[in-house]
Image (cartoon, rainbow, N blue to C red; front, side):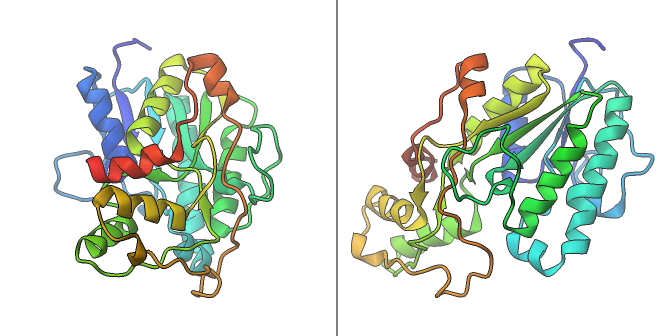
Length: 285
C-alpha cells in the first residue's frame, strides 16, 4: 500500500484519540478519524453495535484501535457487555483491517499485569487482577497470534486535561476545598501527547509485537495530588490522603505500575519520562 495512504484512528472522541489526531494532522498526515457520535461529519463507528461489514471510506495503511470501554468499575459490573467491545469487536475489526492491508496498532495497559513486581517485561506472562486487564490481555493474545501485522503498545496511566478526576481535583483546590486521593494506589503516568508520539513511531516503523511505555517510576495518587496542589499554588494541607480500600475501592490495588520500556529506548530512543511531567502538564495546559 502507498506510504501516502491515510491512517485510520478508531476512537477519535477520547483524550488519547484527540491527541493522536492532532499530532498526525499537525505533521501533515492524511487521517480518517471515526466517531461514535452520529452527525459529527466523521465516519460513524460504534464498536458496541458491531463491526461486521464495516470498512473505512478509503483504504488505510495504518489503523489505531483506540476505542474501548476503559472504566474498571463498568468492566467489573458488566463483564459480558464490556467484553463484546474490548475483545470481540476490537479483534474482529483488527482482523478485517489486516485483511485490507492495514498495519494494526492496539493501545493496551499496564493492567495486564497484577502489579506485584516493578518493571514488568514485555515477555512476562500477563497476570491481570482486574476484569478490564483480563479483557485487554485477551485482546492482546488474539492480535499477537501468528500472522503478524499488529503491534500492542502497553501504556501507563495516560493523563490529559479534561480527565474527570483530575479536573475535579484542580477545581476543588482552586476553590480551597479538600481532596482525598488514594495513598496506597500507584500509577506510572505519561502525558497524552507523549503517548501519541509513541503510537505514531511504532506505526510508522510497522514493527509488530509488544512495546511498553510508562513513567520511570511509580508514584501514588496522593503524591501526584500533592504536586498538583503545589503547582497550583494551593495549600498542601487541602490534600488529605485516604486508603483506597477504606474508601470502598473494589478492585485489586497493585503495588507497582511500572513496566520495562527498554524496547522503545533501544529502537526509537524514547526513554521513560519522570511521572511529575504528566502531572505538571495538567496545570500547564
